[in-house]
Length: 318
Image (cartoon, rainbow, N blue to C red; front, side, top):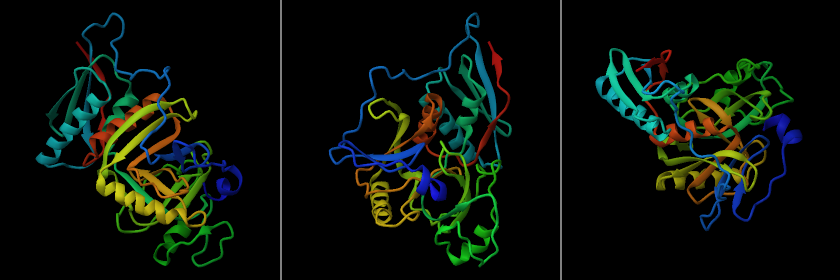
């Protein structure tokens, strides 16, 4: 959204009979209606994909060692092993096995698994929802306190210097930022997944935590032609928090009516909110492929790891 999308690229959305759509071109967040119904995937929805064994390689296994980006204690490593195994099973990888090794975890699954699937399994998967305070094009810096005719919204005084100095070019739009739950953030993002123009965003304190997500599922929305999407279900605490923040945002002017969705400190999207969402279920849709949606659902369902785990080059073992 932001400058480019709020006045040029924004689609017109309306309240649908079944689903409330909250977003703009290329990405959306929606919620079930009061009766809890949501669009059913069409009959042609592809079945869940799984790792497969290549012809002629009966009994072959993919083996990779996952190394954390910081030192973990024994309890953290044990918990990480449980989460990694749960993610692999949720992703449908057959006969998944996880064992501790010096400095990390060893994952072994039947068949062949692509490298990007392994990387997805090892991501930390810290999910956050934060209100958007201000937006500006990401390519230039502005003097602190100086006028910025392209800025929309209000940057908090204690964030002004960082926001003014931040530059987000095409190569830096996906950079992550430390996420202090109680502090405002200045981060890089894009207009939308469909419109990857670099933007910089000022975000408010954390409003809803990913730990309050109880379930995530990927499905194909053929009814409204939004492609692959991920449905999140909140626990009672998350349901209340999400209803409260979306209710406050819905009455604000652009861009203060937007909510940023961050995964591992990176802005995934920042859709506009049109009304309070009270049902405890949110649909994130956009330009997802099947594998991307299923990978995201698997890691969000299992919860976040205490660190990011980088997989080694996968090897094949009998």
